[in-house]
Length: 171
Image (cartoon, rainbow, N blue to C red):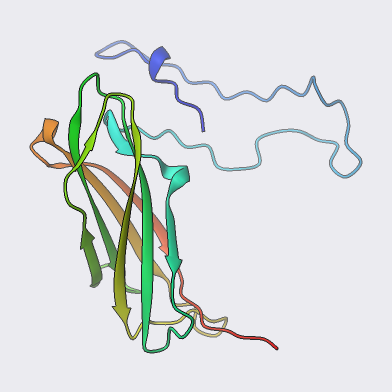
């Protein structure tokens, strides 16, 4: 990811964003001789206190998940304000339909100094989870929200991902 905040024009001024590939450093490759952009390019606009999207983790802590999955969430929050802020994180897990709330975890208030990145850790139990398999690829929607005092704790950043829970073993 690349932060372009320093180059953005605010207000009514127009911004032009160009994504370019420079193939000068590596002229050839044994397996792939072309070049280009082969992944999705996204522009993410966020408040100064926001979730760092590439630094979030959800893990299953127990081995037998058929009766319940103990989930561990680790979320990176960055404060780019020029002052200390108080932030809160909410994790919500939605069922297969993307609408039915099956788990919600709210963090307490966390103080972040100007420029500080902090990891917020939470755990929760998902009772009788729908398990992912090739025959029935059950996926949850994982939503992470951050809110902070500048906006009277209104939601200021939302990150959504799709996750599956699977139970397997091998000898």
